Image 1 (tube, rainbow, N blue to C red):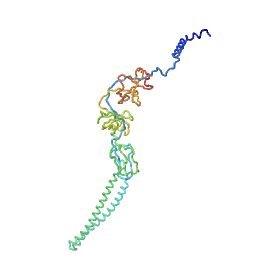
Image 2 (image 1 turned 120 degrees about the vertical axis):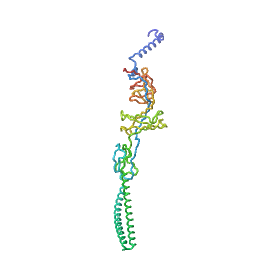
Image 3 (image 1 turned 90 degrees about the vertical axis):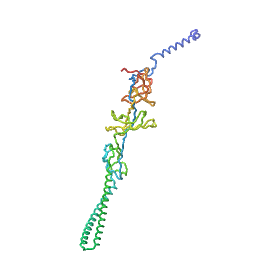
Image 4 (image 1 turned 120 degrees about the horizontal axis):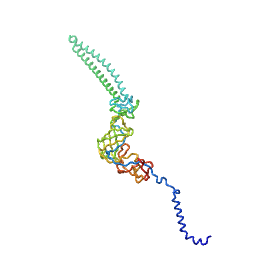
Length: 378
């Protein structure tokens, strides 16, 4: 042991601690010894646009499914069965065209009985007419004999009574025949009613009965829907400027590029539980491209202007809190909520949440609030 070492150690203790601290600081600050954070300082290249305000016509939109404006049911006037259906679902029929035939058993039986009755009545009338001819001939002969004073007056009166009785019986037989013929004509007319005509022009709806099926009096055999115009009934918000007679543009994702014309015909003043007003729009379908049940969106020009920013669809995101965009600010992506409006092709109008000149990020892959980003060179 070095003499005097224990006496001198305390005075070197501060120097020793300072030396150890320096070594630790050196080791920590060496780049090779640090554990880097993932993507620390990494910047994601993004595409951006600079917001520019523009003026657009103020519009509101309503979405829903098209429905027939008019539907007419073809019903059976009798109990019976469906003998024939002449059109299939979706076929177009003109008003007055025979669409179905019903076989009414009671009418057929009645017609058969009346025909037999008419045959018997004609035979009876023929016999009565023959008797009347004989009675009138006998009366004429009796009068001639009376004029020659060959018989008494009572003989002439007897012949007149006989002829009058036969004449009455003949008229009764003729009336009976006429009655049976009228009843048959009426039955034939009723049988003609079993040939059911389309009350309106349109397309045959789904759910028509099949031939051979039993049908009750008043039963619906098939329905015909009017396909021009069609109607759209939907809930609509922001309807304070909406009025009857305003024009609408009707579009459907099922018919890209096709725009139909519409007109607002009804607007309910009271709001529903969702705070919307019910609007009814009649849609021109003279070209026959639209169909009942098709999902469409109606855009209605309110006759006013609004200042908005048009933003690409790709720049907009949404969650349960609403829609938002990411702006480029100090090299980072900053989330901002926005209020959107009408759709213009691949762009959506934004009325709130964007200022003139804001740099809006248009590709949102790998973007989160605070992500470091840099705009790509154009």
